[in-house]
Image (cartoon, rainbow, N blue to C red; front, side):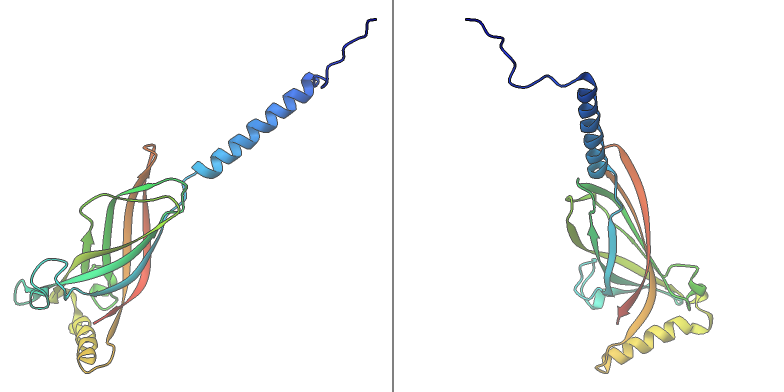
Length: 198
């Protein structure tokens, strides 16, 4: 007795096989793009304060001010930032530069405070990192028309000494250079308003 053996599954037609392979390639490409396309990190300034604990160098509250000349003085500040990595891979930051300006100091054209990081650091994928950076403030009286800026800051600090919160509103610019996967290197500029407690 003989019978014809039929395969359990019929072999799909070449057209159907081609459609399935094309669909798989499109899905794989879309997933690769979703996970590999670079996303800008989020950089948030969490606060500025006077460096009274000496983390920026020097000797605590006494060493936080340095007299450069009769018209110039340098002070140390600390800036807290949070960097959130929105990518699905680690980001390595090579450079972070900070500048703070105030409308009453050279009409906001010249930063009165500058700082930058000294070492590279990595932010893991889909995570946030809190960082505190010391940076220096140099006051030059020639850039302060009518001493408006120093009066504003001085009044805020005197208010703090009297037991109330003395605050100064400034503009902070953060420039970050970062890279990932060894294939791209990018700059990001963040400019935000920030209140400094005296």
